[in-house]
Length: 338
Image (tube, rainbow, N blue to C red; front, side):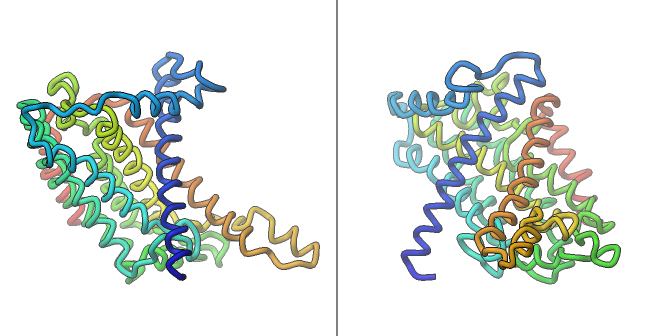
């Protein structure tokens, strides 16, 4: 792919990540309202779809205020770090065969490296704000994110060892036909050690993405808003955007490593019957139709996991700091070693 084509793909994926985050915000509001017996956004546009647009206009027009007691350069740079690292992690997601910004041979390591760098943004934001609430939030974030990275990394070793590859594209391909004479795809989630690895990954991923019940670094009832208390306007929006983008990224990586990526459960359903239609017409299945079918499978499975994330967020209370850290060191890490 030439430079022009690469730039097109990069901007397309960035636009897709931003659109996915905006859609996820709207979906979460609607689902939380449904589960908590209230209305949610339903005034601006049909089904409240334009509420996200209205919120973006409000954020863009708010005053970009920086506290006079803050460390100005670090305060400004911190939100950008988390957005860049989140989008870079998004870049290795294999939506379809050959469809990714970067098909790195070490895609799993790259993903882990990018989400590990996100802790610097939170710590710098909390420290640069020069507030006791933000500093406490930064300390909590550093302890939580570093602790839960250990079981997260260990859980990903299982699909990597099964596929004998660090490439996300290759791991997805290895989950092709595997059961009942090829009738069922060999998703790694069906292998005995993998369901436990997925459970550890999913729990640690919720903690890494700062979602309830692991949102102690914000904890509005204790720390005002935690590390981003002093942020407003566009800088606050960057933290908010990164959180939702990271949630979709974690779900997408889980789909690639444990749920077959773009592979359906039954190989005969791979193209939703489009192959039979074109075969009846005496024509080969167009490449764009095959790519669209694979993309639909991948995104559909990712959205199911996003739905589960939101379900957990709406039903479970926030965990206290000491049980949260004890859970990582006394349960998750020993289980991930087994």
